[in-house]
Image (tube, rainbow, N blue to C red; front, side, top):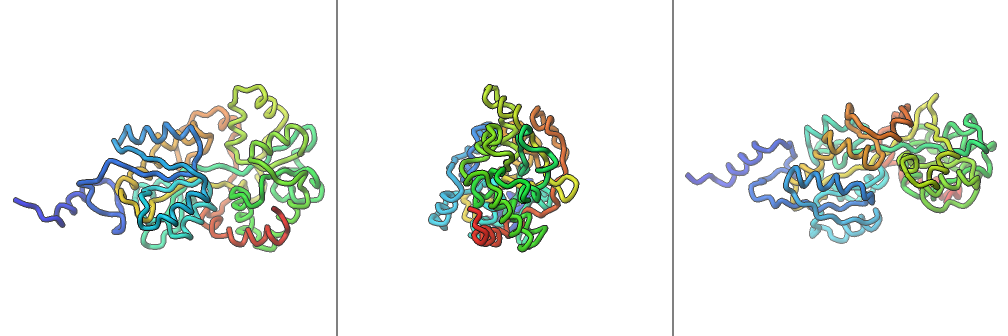
Amino acid sequence: MKISKNIAILLSCLTTVFNVNAQTAGSTENQEQILNLYSSRHYQTDEKLYSDFTKFTGIKINRLDTDDNALLERLKSEGKNSQADVILMTDASRLWKAEANDLFLPVKSKILDSKIPENLRGKDSGEGVKWYGFSTRARVIVYNKNLVKAGEVDTYDKLAEPQNKGKVCTRSASHPYMMSLLSSIIEQKGEEGAAVWAKGMADNLAKPPKGGDIDQIRSVASGECGVALTNSYYYARLMLSPKQEDKDVVAKTTLIWPNQSTNGTHVNVAGGGIAKYSPHKANAVKFLEYLASDSAQKYFAEGNNEWPVVKGVAVDNAALKSLGTFKQQAVNIAAIGMNQVKAQKILDKVGYK
């Protein structure tokens, strides 16, 4: 007996373990075993993360790796012709920008909603969630223990106080990592309080912002700066490095979890979502749900020194263990993204470049 197309689709949907909304649901009967991944994650350690997905599912990943701005421009220019299935980005500000440009397709997934904390994902519009965080990193303070006392630099606020004039190093204030930190300060202190902090930071710079986070850490070790901001995984990377020069940098510096006696340390995410015009939606959902699996979550920690977002996942990373636990800011990551425009206006106003 010939089964109608509608019944075939229904049966296909009932056999899948994924709860996708009407926009992402559909027959997987003839689904190609392909996933087109557009990613701004530039970590070589992610290779095993992707190869394991293929091994577990049989789905081949075609990857396009580029920086965030180029990725966003490509997706916008491709429009409805885009072959992207999943978009991965490394910061809440970038995820927000992709969402603001209408590049994500909302998805409803019981697996993702149960595993990813609500404060580490985009807001549910009723049609679904457009992006999820899959790993976290903290924006920490690193100081030269021969030049600076811990009590002088143990909060974000103190970095902007007159006592640290000429001692502070940061990367460009307009870099997404810094923008997200400022956005979290806006969420807690309001725009006026955030502007005071940004002006103090600009006044306290030891040199014009230049280079990445590891460059800032090295400048602290050399004494060019007394203190700097960095993402936690960069410092962990130096801690695990076999190179003597990196061991020397770690020996001359100390990491601080900022604001432990007040509102906690700023935490950001790397995350992603389904591309709006994904040609392989079922595979895209499979991939996102795979990223929330214990094996993938463990790899984020052991491969790139990030923390899992899923509670209870055991990790084996000597550097992360040695850094210990810390109090996190209770700020919704989606709000950090939405404050980006305000943050840029403040930076422009106070002249923090």
